[in-house]
Image (spheres, rainbow, N blue to C red):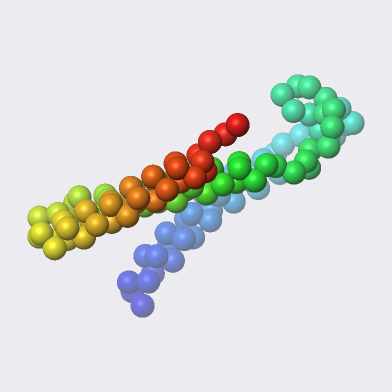
Length: 117
């Protein structure tokens, strides 16, 4: 139980760091609402159409592909740190991983998933 106490203290401090400024702003801040302050605006320009327009599917596709490749490259950092201890088997496993990653990238490039017309 002693090992978990440090984790509980860490979580508690994290919650306090997030909650205390919010509560302080709510308690100390001025509460003077008016129609201009509560109106919706974007970059100082009044809204001229509905903000809930559908996005193009390509936007989501590019975002998902970015996250996918970004996360897969994050797997290279632990490999680079432990390269001496894993030997040639780990080295060849990562080369295989990078080969698959490269094939996936080439496939996306050829099918036009990265093109934005």
